[in-house]
Length: 212
Ligand code: FOL
Image (cartoon, rainbow, N blue to C red):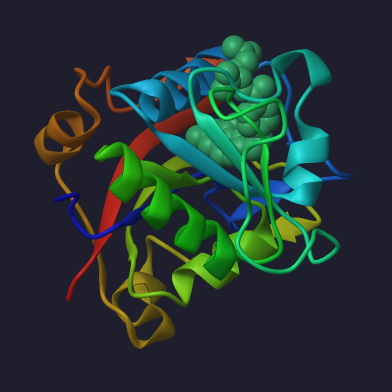
């Protein structure tokens, strides 16, 4: 029997103010190895799903969507209410599956995992509204955070602060940063040097988990 569904949020955010977006896209350009990490980690294993809001879907270059090798689930209040049926593009496609709420997206994925007897990982990939909804659920267990050290002007922000004084008390949940070894074991790959630099922007891959 598949294990209870758990959610992993994947996000890259500025260290200064948890900025994640600007003008409908990412705040930065050219963090190609960072994007490659996102793609590898969300793809690794079988039957993974990525859940995103409609604005995030729109922000992905059309040639890259649906994100391949992962079941894409897109959320919009304008989609038909009720449990989604097959993915757009047919039952074996990468979707997208159109869901009217995060709850419907999760109900769909639970049903699908039971029917296919699969235990693929479920990643929430934004944006701010969908992260906020996910963080309100007990299923949200971990955050794969890429902490971007350079400052970028942002108009969209991750809803909680991880790192610094706030992390321990955030939203009355306790978020703890896992070690590099624990992080590597969970994602299933070696982690490069603590700090990466691309095009003059420094960033660091981190994993945070919520204590019960
Ligand atoms: N998490 C992290 N760590 N970095 C991100 O850039 C990120 N971006 C989003 C959500 N979580 C993230 C949302 N935005 C693509 C584009 C934008 C996007 C998410 C994904 C995208 O095109 N992904 C392709 C990779 C294409 C390439 O290799 O350049 C994919 O296959 O995943």
